[in-house]
Image 1 (cartoon, rainbow, N blue to C red):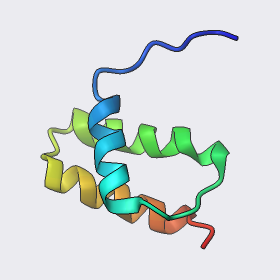
Image 2: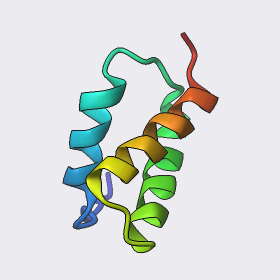
Image 3: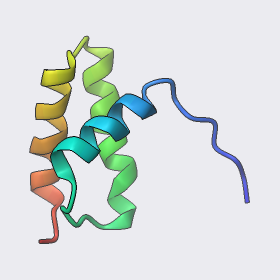
Image 4: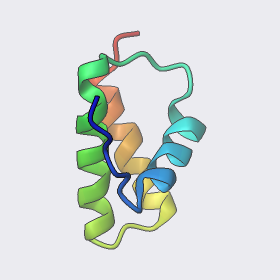
Length: 65
């Protein structure tokens, strides 16, 4: 199995996802999409509050429950 080096922002994304989307079911294949959307927001200078809003809004579009 190949080891993927973590992006420096992964911890920030994981933390905010856990705070705001805990218990929300998403398809395992969509996890990368969450990180992609979140990293794009970070690249645009999103604060933690703005990043959380982006993550929650995106997860709402892909949630299974």
